[in-house]
Image (cartoon, rainbow, N blue to C red; front, top):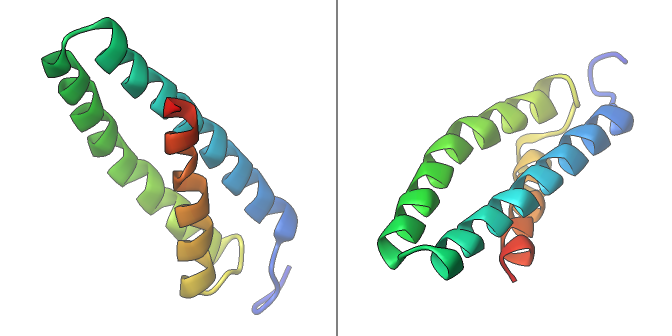
Length: 90
C-alpha cells in the first residue's frame, strides 16, 4: 500500500475490534449501574471514558496513517464504532 491508498483490511480490523471493545464497555457500564450503586456506576463510566480517550486517539491515528483514511473518514469510523457502547448498554 502506497500513499493515497486505503488499506481496507486494516481499516476493517480496527473498526471491528473497536466496535466490540466499545460494545463490551457498554455492557460493563450498564451492569455497574444495574447491579451496583449509582455511585459505582458513575465511577465505572468515568474510568471507561478516561481509558477510551487513549483508545480512540490511537485508533484515529492508526486509521489515518496505516489505514490511509483522511481525517473526516477516520472520525466517522470512530464515531460509528463508538455508538456500539449504547448497543452494549441496551
